[in-house]
Amino acid sequence: MTARHGAPRLPSDAGDAARSDTQTATGAERQDFYARIGHLHMTPLWAVLHALVPPEPAETCVPALWRWADVQPPLAESGTLISAEEAIRRVLILENPALRGQSLITPSLYAGLQLILPGEIAPSHRHTQSALRFVVDGRGAYTSVDGERTTMAPGDFIITPSWTWHDHGNDTFGDGGEPVVWLDGLDIPILRMFGATFAENAAQRAQPVTRAEGSSAARYGSNMLPVGHVARTRTSPVFSYPYVRAREALDTLARHGEIDAWTGVRLRYVNPATGGWAMPTMGTALQLMPRGFAGKPYRSTDGTVYSVVEGSGRVEIARGERREVFAFGPKDHFVVPPWSSARFEIGADDCVLFAFSDRPVHEALGWHREEFLD
Ligand code: GTQ
Image: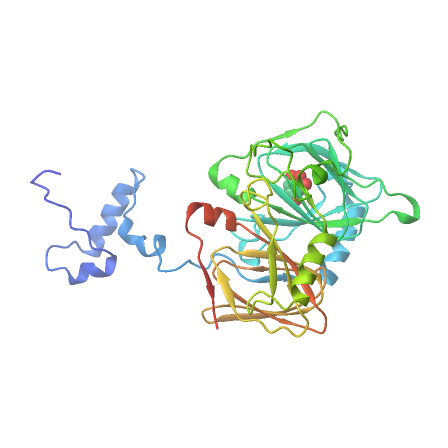
Protein backbone atom coordinates (compact mmCIF):
# COMPACT_ATOMS: atom_id res chain seq x y z
CA MET A 1 0.00 0.00 0.00
CA THR A 2 1.54 3.35 -0.99
CA ALA A 3 1.32 6.49 1.10
CA ARG A 4 -0.58 8.19 -1.69
CA HIS A 5 -3.49 5.80 -1.35
CA GLY A 6 -3.23 5.56 2.42
CA ALA A 7 -4.36 2.62 4.49
CA PRO A 8 -7.70 1.24 3.38
CA ARG A 9 -10.59 2.16 5.66
CA LEU A 10 -13.26 -0.33 4.97
CA PRO A 11 -16.56 -0.06 6.79
CA SER A 12 -17.47 -3.38 8.41
CA ASP A 13 -20.68 -3.31 6.44
CA ALA A 14 -22.47 -0.98 4.09
CA GLY A 15 -24.43 0.63 6.92
CA ASP A 16 -21.28 1.92 8.64
CA ALA A 17 -20.41 4.07 5.69
CA ALA A 18 -23.09 6.61 6.57
CA ARG A 19 -21.61 7.09 10.03
CA SER A 20 -18.05 7.49 8.79
CA ASP A 21 -16.74 11.04 9.25
CA THR A 22 -14.21 10.72 6.43
CA GLN A 23 -14.91 10.60 2.66
CA THR A 24 -17.18 8.70 1.29
CA ALA A 25 -18.42 8.10 -2.23
CA THR A 26 -22.00 8.57 -3.35
CA GLY A 27 -24.17 5.60 -4.26
CA ALA A 28 -23.71 6.32 -7.93
CA GLU A 29 -19.92 6.40 -7.56
CA ARG A 30 -20.01 3.10 -5.78
CA GLN A 31 -22.19 1.49 -8.41
CA ASP A 32 -19.78 2.75 -11.03
CA PHE A 33 -16.85 1.30 -9.08
CA TYR A 34 -18.60 -2.08 -8.68
CA ALA A 35 -19.27 -2.16 -12.40
CA ARG A 36 -15.63 -1.41 -13.19
CA ILE A 37 -14.20 -4.08 -10.89
CA GLY A 38 -16.90 -6.45 -12.10
CA HIS A 39 -15.09 -6.55 -15.43
CA LEU A 40 -12.08 -7.85 -13.51
CA HIS A 41 -14.25 -10.55 -11.91
CA MET A 42 -14.09 -8.90 -8.52
CA THR A 43 -16.81 -7.86 -6.14
CA PRO A 44 -16.80 -5.92 -2.86
CA LEU A 45 -16.94 -8.04 0.27
CA TRP A 46 -18.78 -5.36 2.21
CA ALA A 47 -21.86 -5.83 0.06
CA VAL A 48 -22.10 -9.52 0.92
CA LEU A 49 -20.28 -9.90 4.24
CA HIS A 50 -23.45 -10.21 6.29
CA ALA A 51 -24.64 -13.06 4.06
CA LEU A 52 -21.27 -14.81 3.97
CA VAL A 53 -20.70 -14.69 7.71
CA PRO A 54 -24.16 -14.70 9.32
CA PRO A 55 -24.53 -15.03 13.09
CA GLU A 56 -26.12 -18.43 12.60
CA PRO A 57 -26.72 -20.76 9.66
CA ALA A 58 -28.93 -19.38 6.91
CA GLU A 59 -32.01 -21.45 6.13
CA THR A 60 -30.95 -23.48 3.13
CA CYS A 61 -33.78 -26.00 2.95
CA VAL A 62 -37.16 -26.75 4.50
CA PRO A 63 -38.69 -29.59 6.52
CA ALA A 64 -40.42 -32.14 4.32
CA LEU A 65 -42.31 -35.41 4.69
CA TRP A 66 -42.78 -38.18 2.13
CA ARG A 67 -45.67 -40.46 3.20
CA TRP A 68 -45.33 -44.06 2.17
CA ALA A 69 -48.98 -44.05 1.08
CA ASP A 70 -48.15 -41.27 -1.40
CA VAL A 71 -44.78 -42.56 -2.51
CA GLN A 72 -45.44 -46.27 -2.89
CA PRO A 73 -47.86 -46.08 -5.86
CA PRO A 74 -45.52 -44.05 -8.11
CA LEU A 75 -42.61 -46.22 -7.05
CA ALA A 76 -44.54 -49.32 -8.10
CA GLU A 77 -45.52 -47.54 -11.32
CA SER A 78 -41.87 -46.75 -12.06
CA GLY A 79 -41.39 -50.51 -12.18
CA THR A 80 -43.67 -50.64 -15.22
CA LEU A 81 -42.02 -47.67 -16.93
CA ILE A 82 -38.40 -48.73 -16.97
CA SER A 83 -36.34 -51.77 -16.01
CA ALA A 84 -33.56 -51.64 -13.43
CA GLU A 85 -31.22 -52.63 -16.24
CA GLU A 86 -32.16 -49.69 -18.44
CA ALA A 87 -32.38 -47.20 -15.60
CA ILE A 88 -29.05 -48.45 -14.15
CA ARG A 89 -30.57 -47.44 -10.82
CA ARG A 90 -34.37 -47.19 -10.68
CA VAL A 91 -34.63 -44.52 -8.04
CA LEU A 92 -37.10 -41.78 -7.25
CA ILE A 93 -35.06 -39.00 -5.70
CA LEU A 94 -36.42 -37.28 -2.59
CA GLU A 95 -35.91 -33.60 -3.36
CA ASN A 96 -36.16 -30.93 -0.74
CA PRO A 97 -39.05 -28.64 -1.82
CA ALA A 98 -36.72 -25.64 -1.46
CA LEU A 99 -34.03 -27.24 -3.64
CA ARG A 100 -35.96 -28.72 -6.57
CA GLY A 101 -34.00 -29.81 -9.59
CA GLN A 102 -30.76 -30.27 -7.69
CA SER A 103 -31.13 -33.83 -6.41
CA LEU A 104 -30.69 -32.60 -2.85
CA ILE A 105 -32.60 -33.47 0.31
CA THR A 106 -30.36 -31.10 2.26
CA PRO A 107 -27.60 -28.91 0.80
CA SER A 108 -25.08 -31.69 1.52
CA LEU A 109 -27.07 -34.92 1.20
CA TYR A 110 -28.79 -36.93 -1.48
CA ALA A 111 -31.62 -39.39 -0.75
CA GLY A 112 -33.76 -41.58 -2.96
CA LEU A 113 -35.97 -44.65 -2.91
CA GLN A 114 -34.72 -47.49 -5.07
CA LEU A 115 -36.90 -50.32 -6.42
CA ILE A 116 -35.75 -53.76 -7.56
CA LEU A 117 -38.26 -56.26 -8.89
CA PRO A 118 -37.88 -60.05 -8.80
CA GLY A 119 -35.54 -61.20 -11.55
CA GLU A 120 -33.87 -57.82 -12.06
CA ILE A 121 -30.25 -56.73 -11.90
CA ALA A 122 -29.04 -53.16 -11.42
CA PRO A 123 -25.67 -53.42 -13.17
CA SER A 124 -22.30 -53.21 -11.48
CA HIS A 125 -20.50 -49.90 -11.17
CA ARG A 126 -18.39 -47.97 -8.73
CA HIS A 127 -18.05 -44.33 -7.79
CA THR A 128 -16.22 -42.11 -5.37
CA GLN A 129 -19.45 -41.31 -3.55
CA SER A 130 -20.29 -43.50 -0.59
CA ALA A 131 -23.78 -44.95 -0.41
CA LEU A 132 -25.90 -46.26 2.41
CA ARG A 133 -28.94 -48.47 1.97
CA PHE A 134 -31.72 -48.75 4.49
CA VAL A 135 -34.25 -51.43 3.58
CA VAL A 136 -37.79 -50.04 3.68
CA ASP A 137 -40.10 -52.62 2.10
CA GLY A 138 -39.88 -56.24 0.98
CA ARG A 139 -37.16 -58.79 1.44
CA GLY A 140 -34.98 -61.09 -0.61
CA ALA A 141 -33.14 -58.63 -2.85
CA TYR A 142 -29.40 -58.51 -2.50
CA THR A 143 -26.61 -56.06 -2.95
CA SER A 144 -23.12 -57.22 -3.88
CA VAL A 145 -20.14 -55.26 -2.65
CA ASP A 146 -16.63 -56.26 -3.68
CA GLY A 147 -17.60 -59.85 -4.40
CA GLU A 148 -19.79 -60.48 -1.37
CA ARG A 149 -23.57 -60.55 -1.40
CA THR A 150 -25.86 -59.38 1.36
CA THR A 151 -29.50 -60.35 1.33
CA MET A 152 -31.80 -57.54 2.37
CA ALA A 153 -34.51 -57.56 5.02
CA PRO A 154 -36.55 -54.59 6.27
CA GLY A 155 -34.57 -52.36 8.62
CA ASP A 156 -31.14 -53.60 7.54
CA PHE A 157 -28.49 -50.93 7.11
CA ILE A 158 -25.98 -51.71 4.36
CA ILE A 159 -22.89 -49.81 3.22
CA THR A 160 -21.38 -49.32 -0.21
CA PRO A 161 -17.95 -47.80 0.49
CA SER A 162 -16.39 -45.27 -1.85
CA TRP A 163 -14.97 -46.79 -5.05
CA THR A 164 -16.20 -50.36 -4.41
CA TRP A 165 -17.92 -52.32 -7.17
CA HIS A 166 -21.58 -52.86 -6.43
CA ASP A 167 -24.61 -54.28 -8.14
CA HIS A 168 -28.07 -54.96 -6.81
CA GLY A 169 -30.35 -57.81 -7.74
CA ASN A 170 -33.42 -59.69 -6.79
CA ASP A 171 -33.45 -63.37 -7.67
CA THR A 172 -36.53 -64.24 -5.64
CA PHE A 173 -38.97 -65.74 -8.10
CA GLY A 174 -42.43 -67.22 -8.11
CA ASP A 175 -44.85 -66.70 -5.24
CA GLY A 176 -42.06 -65.73 -2.85
CA GLY A 177 -40.69 -62.99 -5.08
CA GLU A 178 -41.16 -59.50 -3.72
CA PRO A 179 -40.42 -56.03 -5.01
CA VAL A 180 -37.87 -54.54 -2.66
CA VAL A 181 -37.54 -50.85 -1.87
CA TRP A 182 -34.73 -49.24 0.04
CA LEU A 183 -33.62 -45.77 0.99
CA ASP A 184 -30.40 -44.67 -0.70
CA GLY A 185 -28.35 -42.05 1.11
CA LEU A 186 -25.33 -40.71 -0.74
CA ASP A 187 -22.77 -37.96 -0.21
CA ILE A 188 -23.19 -36.87 -3.86
CA PRO A 189 -23.38 -33.11 -3.02
CA ILE A 190 -20.24 -33.25 -0.88
CA LEU A 191 -18.16 -34.84 -3.63
CA ARG A 192 -19.71 -32.51 -6.19
CA MET A 193 -18.65 -29.52 -4.09
CA PHE A 194 -15.10 -30.79 -3.80
CA GLY A 195 -14.87 -31.71 -7.48
CA ALA A 196 -14.03 -35.29 -6.59
CA THR A 197 -16.72 -37.26 -8.43
CA PHE A 198 -15.52 -40.22 -10.51
CA ALA A 199 -17.46 -43.28 -11.65
CA GLU A 200 -16.87 -46.38 -13.73
CA ASN A 201 -19.07 -49.13 -15.17
CA ALA A 202 -18.01 -52.73 -14.77
CA ALA A 203 -17.46 -55.01 -17.73
CA GLN A 204 -19.91 -57.55 -16.34
CA ARG A 205 -23.51 -56.86 -15.40
CA ALA A 206 -23.13 -58.61 -12.07
CA GLN A 207 -19.80 -59.07 -10.38
CA PRO A 208 -18.64 -62.59 -9.63
CA VAL A 209 -19.27 -63.72 -6.08
CA THR A 210 -15.87 -64.39 -4.56
CA ARG A 211 -16.72 -64.65 -0.87
CA ALA A 212 -19.48 -66.48 0.95
CA GLU A 213 -22.37 -64.39 2.19
CA GLY A 214 -21.73 -63.53 5.83
CA SER A 215 -17.93 -63.47 5.54
CA SER A 216 -17.62 -59.81 6.44
CA ALA A 217 -20.07 -60.17 9.31
CA ALA A 218 -18.09 -63.09 10.70
CA ARG A 219 -14.73 -61.40 10.24
CA TYR A 220 -15.58 -57.90 11.43
CA GLY A 221 -19.11 -57.86 12.81
CA SER A 222 -18.99 -60.26 15.74
CA ASN A 223 -17.27 -57.97 18.24
CA MET A 224 -13.99 -59.43 17.00
CA LEU A 225 -11.47 -58.52 14.31
CA PRO A 226 -8.85 -60.60 12.59
CA VAL A 227 -5.66 -60.39 14.65
CA GLY A 228 -3.36 -57.89 13.00
CA HIS A 229 -6.19 -56.14 11.13
CA VAL A 230 -5.24 -52.62 10.11
CA ALA A 231 -7.98 -50.19 9.08
CA ARG A 232 -7.01 -48.89 5.64
CA THR A 233 -10.01 -46.63 5.19
CA ARG A 234 -12.44 -44.92 7.50
CA THR A 235 -15.34 -46.97 6.19
CA SER A 236 -16.52 -49.88 8.28
CA PRO A 237 -15.53 -53.31 6.96
CA VAL A 238 -18.90 -54.55 8.28
CA PHE A 239 -21.07 -53.70 5.34
CA SER A 240 -24.36 -55.04 6.62
CA TYR A 241 -25.92 -54.23 9.98
CA PRO A 242 -29.01 -56.45 10.33
CA TYR A 243 -32.10 -54.91 11.89
CA VAL A 244 -32.77 -57.81 14.25
CA ARG A 245 -29.59 -57.21 16.20
CA ALA A 246 -29.87 -53.43 16.33
CA ARG A 247 -33.51 -53.64 17.32
CA GLU A 248 -32.76 -56.05 20.14
CA ALA A 249 -30.09 -53.74 21.56
CA LEU A 250 -32.50 -50.80 21.58
CA ASP A 251 -35.24 -52.91 23.12
CA THR A 252 -33.02 -54.10 25.95
CA LEU A 253 -31.94 -50.55 26.79
CA ALA A 254 -35.53 -49.28 26.60
CA ARG A 255 -36.77 -52.01 28.92
CA HIS A 256 -34.09 -51.02 31.42
CA GLY A 257 -35.45 -47.50 31.32
CA GLU A 258 -32.43 -45.73 29.88
CA ILE A 259 -34.58 -43.22 28.03
CA ASP A 260 -33.03 -39.89 27.09
CA ALA A 261 -35.50 -36.99 27.35
CA TRP A 262 -34.59 -35.75 23.86
CA THR A 263 -33.87 -38.83 21.78
CA GLY A 264 -35.19 -41.86 23.67
CA VAL A 265 -32.68 -44.63 23.08
CA ARG A 266 -30.34 -43.74 20.25
CA LEU A 267 -27.38 -45.81 19.10
CA ARG A 268 -25.04 -45.02 16.27
CA TYR A 269 -23.72 -47.60 13.85
CA VAL A 270 -20.02 -48.03 14.46
CA ASN A 271 -16.94 -48.93 12.47
CA PRO A 272 -15.51 -51.64 14.76
CA ALA A 273 -12.01 -51.12 13.42
CA THR A 274 -11.84 -47.44 14.42
CA GLY A 275 -14.68 -46.82 16.87
CA GLY A 276 -15.81 -44.02 14.58
CA TRP A 277 -18.91 -43.68 12.48
CA ALA A 278 -19.57 -46.52 10.05
CA MET A 279 -18.96 -44.19 7.10
CA PRO A 280 -16.64 -41.17 6.86
CA THR A 281 -19.13 -38.72 5.41
CA MET A 282 -22.50 -39.95 6.67
CA GLY A 283 -23.43 -40.79 10.24
CA THR A 284 -26.17 -43.33 10.81
CA ALA A 285 -28.19 -44.15 13.90
CA LEU A 286 -31.17 -46.17 15.02
CA GLN A 287 -33.46 -44.62 17.60
CA LEU A 288 -36.24 -46.11 19.71
CA MET A 289 -38.76 -43.92 21.45
CA PRO A 290 -41.19 -45.77 23.70
CA ARG A 291 -44.95 -45.51 23.29
CA GLY A 292 -46.32 -42.31 24.79
CA PHE A 293 -42.87 -40.67 24.72
CA ALA A 294 -43.04 -36.87 24.66
CA GLY A 295 -39.58 -35.62 23.84
CA LYS A 296 -37.84 -32.29 24.24
CA PRO A 297 -36.59 -30.35 21.23
CA TYR A 298 -33.09 -31.03 19.91
CA ARG A 299 -31.20 -29.32 17.13
CA SER A 300 -27.84 -29.70 15.50
CA THR A 301 -25.88 -28.34 12.58
CA ASP A 302 -26.25 -31.59 10.65
CA GLY A 303 -29.51 -31.72 8.70
CA THR A 304 -30.94 -35.20 9.18
CA VAL A 305 -32.98 -37.63 7.08
CA TYR A 306 -35.29 -40.06 8.88
CA SER A 307 -36.82 -43.35 7.79
CA VAL A 308 -39.64 -44.60 10.01
CA VAL A 309 -39.36 -48.31 10.72
CA GLU A 310 -42.00 -49.02 13.34
CA GLY A 311 -44.68 -47.12 15.21
CA SER A 312 -46.09 -43.71 14.58
CA GLY A 313 -45.99 -40.26 16.04
CA ARG A 314 -45.62 -36.58 15.40
CA VAL A 315 -42.53 -34.50 14.92
CA GLU A 316 -42.51 -30.76 15.40
CA ILE A 317 -39.75 -29.14 13.34
CA ALA A 318 -39.04 -25.52 14.23
CA ARG A 319 -36.70 -22.72 13.32
CA GLY A 320 -37.43 -19.19 14.59
CA GLU A 321 -41.02 -18.37 13.69
CA ARG A 322 -41.37 -21.32 11.36
CA ARG A 323 -43.01 -24.36 12.93
CA GLU A 324 -44.27 -27.47 11.22
CA VAL A 325 -45.80 -30.64 12.56
CA PHE A 326 -45.73 -33.89 10.60
CA ALA A 327 -47.69 -36.99 11.59
CA PHE A 328 -45.68 -40.01 10.51
CA GLY A 329 -46.03 -43.78 10.35
CA PRO A 330 -44.06 -46.77 9.12
CA LYS A 331 -42.03 -46.35 5.89
CA ASP A 332 -42.52 -42.59 5.86
CA HIS A 333 -39.47 -40.39 5.35
CA PHE A 334 -38.84 -36.88 6.57
CA VAL A 335 -36.00 -34.38 6.73
CA VAL A 336 -35.03 -32.03 9.53
CA PRO A 337 -33.00 -29.10 8.10
CA PRO A 338 -29.72 -27.99 9.65
CA TRP A 339 -30.22 -26.05 12.90
CA SER A 340 -33.98 -26.69 12.95
CA SER A 341 -35.13 -28.31 16.16
CA ALA A 342 -37.06 -31.59 16.18
CA ARG A 343 -39.40 -32.66 18.97
CA PHE A 344 -41.10 -36.04 18.95
CA GLU A 345 -44.38 -37.30 20.36
CA ILE A 346 -44.90 -41.01 20.01
CA GLY A 347 -48.22 -42.84 19.61
CA ALA A 348 -49.53 -46.07 21.11
CA ASP A 349 -46.63 -48.28 20.00
CA ASP A 350 -42.89 -48.08 20.43
CA CYS A 351 -41.37 -46.18 17.53
CA VAL A 352 -38.11 -46.94 15.75
CA LEU A 353 -36.44 -44.44 13.42
CA PHE A 354 -33.38 -44.76 11.26
CA ALA A 355 -31.48 -41.51 10.75
CA PHE A 356 -28.58 -40.32 8.66
CA SER A 357 -26.76 -37.02 8.37
CA ASP A 358 -23.36 -35.56 7.50
CA ARG A 359 -22.43 -35.31 11.17
CA PRO A 360 -19.07 -37.14 10.78
CA VAL A 361 -17.89 -34.32 8.51
CA HIS A 362 -18.95 -31.64 11.01
CA GLU A 363 -17.16 -33.51 13.79
CA ALA A 364 -14.00 -34.24 11.85
CA LEU A 365 -13.66 -30.58 10.89
CA GLY A 366 -14.48 -29.27 14.34
CA TRP A 367 -17.67 -27.30 13.69
CA HIS A 368 -20.41 -29.64 14.90
CA ARG A 369 -22.88 -27.96 17.26
CA GLU A 370 -25.94 -29.34 18.99
CA GLU A 371 -28.44 -28.02 21.50
CA PHE A 372 -30.66 -29.89 23.90
CA LEU A 373 -33.55 -27.45 24.39
CA ASP A 374 -36.41 -27.34 26.91
O1 GTQ B 1 -27.11 -47.77 -6.07
O2 GTQ B 1 -25.23 -47.18 -6.93
O3 GTQ B 1 -29.66 -43.61 -5.50
O4 GTQ B 1 -25.00 -44.85 -7.97
C1 GTQ B 1 -27.83 -42.93 -6.79
C2 GTQ B 1 -26.64 -43.25 -7.41
C3 GTQ B 1 -28.03 -45.19 -6.04
C4 GTQ B 1 -26.36 -46.92 -6.55
C5 GTQ B 1 -28.50 -43.90 -6.10
C6 GTQ B 1 -26.16 -44.54 -7.35
C7 GTQ B 1 -26.85 -45.51 -6.65
